Image (cartoon, helix red, strand yellow):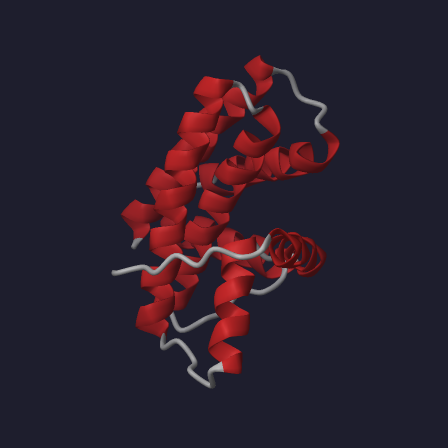
Length: 162
């Protein structure tokens, strides 16, 4: 998938980030949603799959680099984002659009039952701790690194399902 980058003025970038947090989206995800609506150009399920997969890979790469630099707050959000986007990618493949945290949990539980793999639920629970750490900054480096490894395992398992 070919992607196009857009550089926003700082004020708009901050507003997008704030609104995304408020709505439970990742900034890039909300940006695409708003842009597609304003252009009256809805992404088809295949387009959503490509979008989510591309963003997930981007977030994983960024998370790994940030981990080397020790930015634990951003590492936490990037690993959480990569996992969530992979989950949304699988849902999009089934024609579903997950927009709330509860729908993410329900879909992960369904995937866990269908694949007889309880680790999907366990790892997703751990990944959500990373999301909380983004806001609370309460975890030390060792804790973030341990859960980051489980986030990678979750993404790997989810990709094998697809």
